Length: 143
Image 1 (cartoon, rainbow, N blue to C red):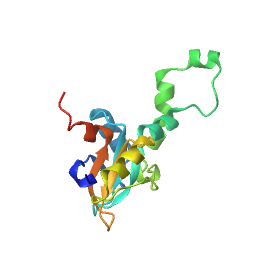
Image 2: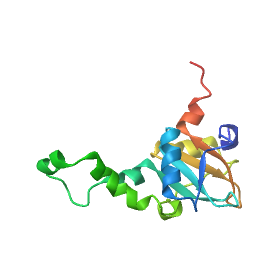
Image 3: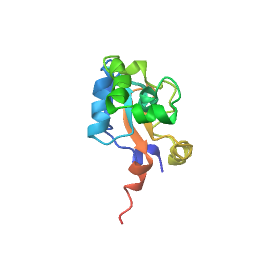
């Protein structure tokens, strides 16, 4: 089997020039842990994950128990707000692995088993043609 046989042909994406707020809104509304980032030509630029966003929510200094008691939800929000106007490509992982549609499915499974949430499927010109995740592959099973 090849990656093209299992990939989602219309993965959810975000433009690299979009504000981070758009990526966050898409991830929250679609219950997604990651998004594939593309440019205006549909070429793969990188990925952005909930792990990246979580790092932005962390306090600058480690908290003591008393600090955590005094912290409010607004304090957590205020750590993310300054970044929401910035471009998505400021936060994108540009070194995320990709797979070719003609690559063996086992190549994608090996990468997914290493902990990647989703793999962009790109052609020889880096144009995004699909996406693969463990769930995309498991959807073929009928329970």
